[in-house]
Length: 510
Image 1 (tube, rainbow, N blue to C red):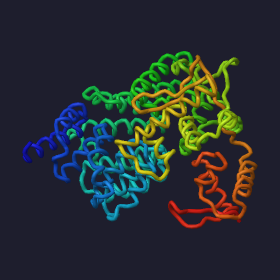
Image 2: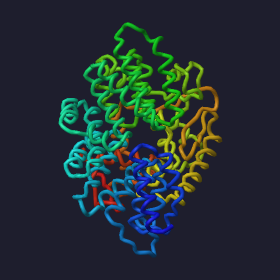
Image 3: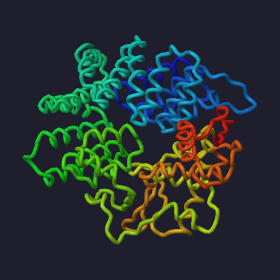
Image 4: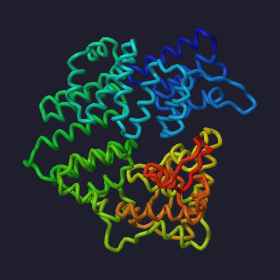
């Protein structure tokens, strides 16, 4: 394909993505052979792949430059580092992404603020994302890119209950007129949805419905998961507007319908949000507990605690230990309640009483799979959790995870008969073999006592000698992630001293 034809194709792809037609954009992307492109064109194509829902392909295109083979010397540009990192962010590999962001030399690049903000947003940490988003909006002069920053900024402000600042952005800029004029219907629908969210927060139900309808009309032009967002907000507005005029039974069917659509679309955060609001509206402590205990994001958990009543907050934080329910039918309205006869598995007992020494990475893998009740763990998340500090290779790393997963499956088959590991498009999750079962989750009470026990284990294994986190993990049979977290707490409390930095970091009992 000639240079002029390639440039024309890339221009068409950009226009399609910005108008929201990612399906056609992906058709055109598939017709371009990236291997013969110039570096600038590869970077642009990788950007389009990521934005059109193919971040894996973006990694493959840029990996020879960003992660070259040992014998090759290639210096990646800051723009290539940023694009590779944000593709990792989209896939959930936030640790490796953060490490790459730190390597960027030109800190004045606008994307240096935006992409790391996406890394925080991925784990719902909008408090850390907000200053980066504000900086990005101030830096960028491109109106389309600035609109992206402003829309993400508004979303963060609304999540952090900073409605007044969000309102000022709505009133003080021309996002709407620009997006209308340029035909950027995808971003415009996002903008209208955010206006609906703001009206929802201030309980202006009429205006909220108006903006939801405006977003909905634009969504009819595009096949997008954002249609689901619009339906969600319609439901939530109706749920809260009704006050006590209509009871739980009236909303049960639409709630279950939206849950089913969220599952089919693979949009687990919408599912989580639906359950939280339904549980909050009807003060359902079982459902709220399921959302609270099954959410790994601390900022989201904090938001739940802020929204519930004082009595419910006490129940959320005092119910300990907690048994995670596993259900074959996730769409059953009573999915969050275990039956009395449902078997309960204690992972700690399972791993310690198996009769053989269990590899630490299997324990870490299981903890990763058991972390989030709403969505399985991606190959990317598992890799950076289990193989901390290693770089993900799109070609070889998935095989490495599949081999490790095979070992875990064999262990589970030999040591219990209640759940197994399921796999769907490189997303792994725990699924019950029978109708339902429960998994004993780690206790949240007695953390001080457990920290004392942790220090005693260090004394037993090392005395006052220096040691590495990985060595302690192996000797004490504790997941590396847990060891790292406990060592951090011990250093902060002065019980342990830290020696060095990076891969050579060692610790020593004070």
